[in-house]
Image (cartoon, rainbow, N blue to C red; front, side, top):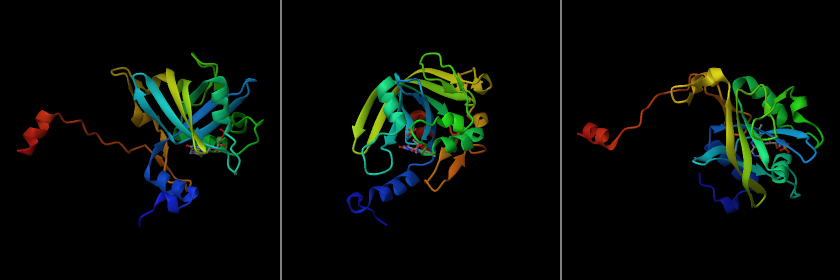
Length: 212
Ligand SMILES: Cc1cc2nc3c(=O)[nH]c(=O)nc-3n(C[C@H](O)[C@H](O)[C@H](O)COP(=O)(O)O)c2cc1C
């Protein structure tokens, strides 16, 4: 099948694209409004984009419906310039899903999901205490594009629970962290447990030797 974007709806494009760009990591983003009210919501249009300097990107659509109303996360980040990406692992999956509910603006998703927070080191926005890892970010730029916003966040500090850090690198003990990823939007997710294979990079010299 072949789909020309101009001939299909935005919803159809969404369905197809998120099924193909998968699995995706999930950022459970905590943010704060001007009054100090906390917000938490998951985003899988998310990845790191570069590491020197360390920058992550998050794609946030407008609130559902025809009006151009930004989601609370995007509005908060524009107004207060900070956020925290909490890494979503298997044990946080249910709570993460509750945070995606379209609650009214004044409802604190963290309370609804029975999540508590811990102070961050470099930003005012707290991280989620139950999350095993979190990235403290300051807004680098928000790019408005059609009905969405792409938020670029500069990572200013990284929190990882000690037991998940291999000090040799340091590396993250990814086999033990059990992060989950989002698949095609039909409520399906992927576990990373047992999903590891090791494939060292090959140098050009090694490649030439093996070709002969
Ligand atoms: C796993 C998952 C991934 C999601 N990814 C995105 C995303 O990348 N972009 C987006 O706009 N909404 C995404 N959503 C929907 C938002 O989480 C949802 O609209 C949420 O209510 C927004 O909250 P806020 O208005 O408090 O920011 C996702 C939902 C789930 C469950």
